[in-house]
Length: 366
Image 1: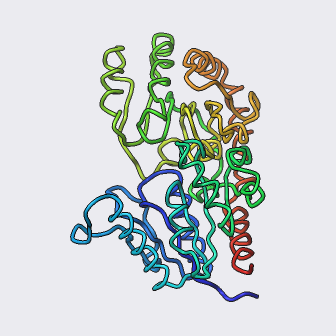
Image 2: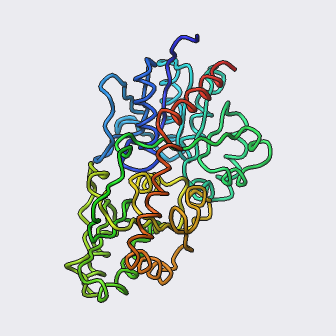
Image 3: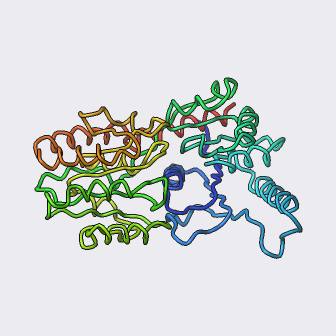
């Protein structure tokens, strides 16, 4: 049996988001298994996921007094500070998450004999959203010891030489969402969870809800999360006469407890990788409606009409139709929810975390 190793995980921050949650969950799993775990972040955000006190946290951003003159000088300072962290910490493997972090992890660890595994959690075309970034990722990823994607279709973004290295590993379901499906009468509430920004397109849900508000006067819409569009969405709801029925209470910690009795969950994003919020809502047995994002994550989770519903991004009228169908047919909603809850077994954290561990151990052996 291979002795437990030291894994360094690299991400911008532990700010509450899908990729950050996956990394935090994996860090907790590896630490519980006896691994030494160090999380390297550029900075500390205001609203972050908690980590076990035994997991070390190291910051790679240069301090104000360390800044140089010009972007090139500051890039070099950041580069050598991060490289210095790898030299000092001497991890047996670096696991990097998201965008430019992946490229920095590869570049700063060159010739240090530390295997690097990079993970693209969202849609690659958005993480590498220019021709220069796409070319750089396509070149640098060939040097990675492993490449993890949550959705098989995402690999099409990369050149053939990179695709050969790709493995698909799902996001592990958080243990808080493994529970018996609520069997009582559901609350007259439609819910959504996610950052309140343009990509999440919560405006679509409000418009669909507005078309149903008169027919279903007892229902409310609650959107959990923080973001720059929170106030404009509240103003929009007020202008539609829904100010007392549309709620945006901000970010919460006990998501499972707050949404498990809801009548419907909606994911309205234009783009997603493998959306944690959708996985979690399905695990709770909530009937779910999701946009069929180009990257293919929701389509890998939902069989349309059986364990949820898929609609085109931005099609609020179709969303309105499906919401009405579910609200009018409680038996159908219960059936869809029960089928959705089967994802608990498929994405059981012990199974998925074990797959991550096996893969990272293989990369370390190489």
